[in-house]
Amino acid sequence: MNLIKIYVSEVVKYLPSQIKEEVKRELTSQIMDMVEESEGDEKAIQSILEVMGSPKDLSDRYLNKEKSLIGPRYYDTYIMILRIVMFALALAFTVIFAMKLIFSQAITGWTILEYPLSLFNAAIMGFAYVTIIFVFIERNQVKIEDEDLVTKKWSVSDLPKESVELPTHRLENIFEIGFVSILMFIINFQPQIIGIYSSVANGSQTAWTVTPILNHATRNIWILWVNVWLISMLISGVIKSIYRLKAKNRIFLSTFFDFLALVLFLFIIATQNMFVDNIAGLIAPGNEAFELLVNRGSFTLLVVILTISMFDILRKLIKVLKQST
Image (tube, rainbow, N blue to C red; front, side, top):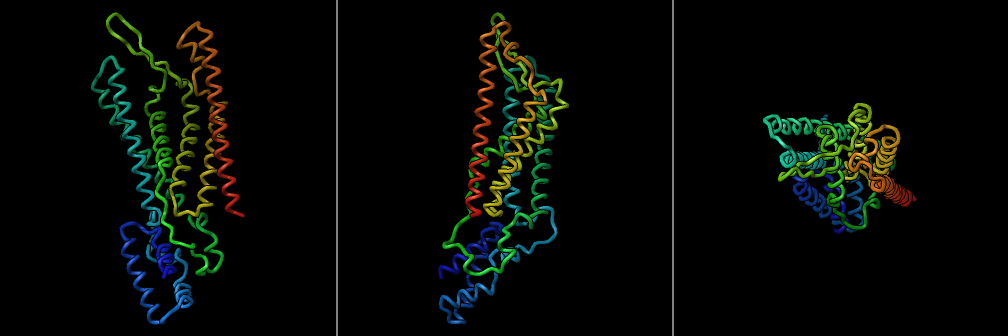
């Protein structure tokens, strides 16, 4: 009977939550009726399950998939990712608007109107990016699904030893998707807030100044590459969250896009003149010690980021190789 429980669990694992329990009861009842009719033992149960076919194929039949932009197989994950992105954009909007109120010397009607408009534009961009990513996955699912179940006949021995629930979406995936969405929103719609903030006393009042970090003069050159870099990270985060994919394929694809993002990051830093020259000199003119500290600190931070990223990519590749052997 444990074999039946495992089989049913594998069938309903990837079904939408609203039909999962109904299918579980219906399928369990159907199998139990067949077992009772055959007065079956363990071998009879295996024969019945062999006739019913692989859990994956049976799950697809329950989905009754029709032509659609994003089918039921990935719909729940799509909605989950979309909610994360929209929440992250709303959070970025709130923080930016609060900073504008704090640091602006004069608040105008346009200031208040500008941010809802920016948020609306960013929401459309986020919706488009997430939808395009899932459309690509939907249209290419044959290539990235479990090839083992396609290339060989399924048997009961392919079932796992015990019933395994799908893992919940890990916090790090949510954080990664949210962080990339916020960064994408800021760089595309509010790049002026990225800078070093300092206060200057003016009598009894304190005025805030912002030393820009991004090179706005060359923005038309680097903005395209920065968006490609951010989209690569977003795709990686989305793939990590799609547990419909075989674990090995999920790790391999996300690692590929992590590596692509790292290469793009190095390319941008090395060639695109994204940051202003001599930031330390703009903050503290004539202070050579401070300038040296900032330059060395920036280089050290870059090395640390690259080292951690490379070790993470190597760790994932080793994991894929172990699963392949």
